[in-house]
Length: 412
Image 1: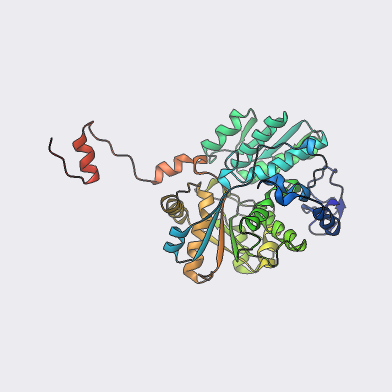
Image 2 (image 1 turned 45 degrees about the vertical axis):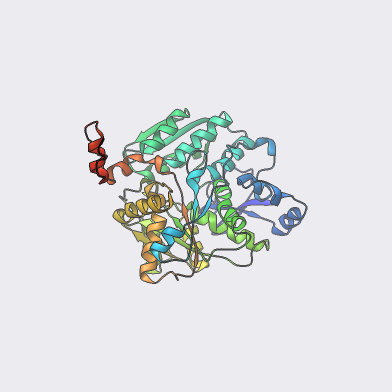
């Protein structure tokens, strides 16, 4: 019912083949299904009665045995109507899909539950990834749950301590290389190719995408079968925007929804090869050798899934935009202070992008918009502390507190 296929030449591989790129043309792979078979299966399934989670959509996954599933109860994250923030920005129907509610605090858990389950199904004993932070935290947790050895390559500098602490506490072997994420990824890919006992779980692995596509499924189910006009997603390595689009397309193919949303990708100004390609109408990206942004989770200059992302944006009639670090921090504060949702800087880029696109008239103010926020704010608390107001320091008496609050003293 399911198989792996090259996104360019279409060459097929079994779902049990350990292959990360096409042996014919070298491009990346995706999981495809025999949808007529899947449609018949769904008619006999009670999946709609299950609680909202990644594994509610078990029938849509390329994992053969339920006994192999490694889960930490991921998915089922909130879809919040943001009326106060929407009013400030001038948009009537704004929702935030808060992926920071996942077990390790980011959307990566959706892909990792499927990826690590596949690793267990294949019988591998060691898993690996390169990471700017969230992938490492997630893989380390799921590897620990599965009893697998885990090796993680991180770039020198720029990994938020909240994420690094997770990888370490879960028992992963963390190796910091003198280089950036793109260099770390090349190294871990080579490692997995030369040592078959090492199973790669970056988003180049198509099983990761299968878990992440459930964001789209959940949005549709949380909106009672309705589809938003637009979904706005932070873009780093570009796996997530590709995955979410795949989810919507699959639901449409299976006649579970009747239309598709526009996919909109947001990148930090200093790490924006996909947004630049979209703006130029180019079919290829120009990698950025030294990407720079405060949003470490999307500080990636040569995204692996760029081709999938460009197709998702083009096929959906969407667009892409860049935002500055200052705009990201401002959006992070706005979401926290008006809606009570604390997200890491990369996550806030979707809000910053929405604000900019509204000002340009690119987004109609009557559109139903879902902004995906990808990681919890406690992933990177140092940034929040650095760019917010500092605590007051006063003497231990009530007069000092009243003065700060602008309250009059009450006579004893």
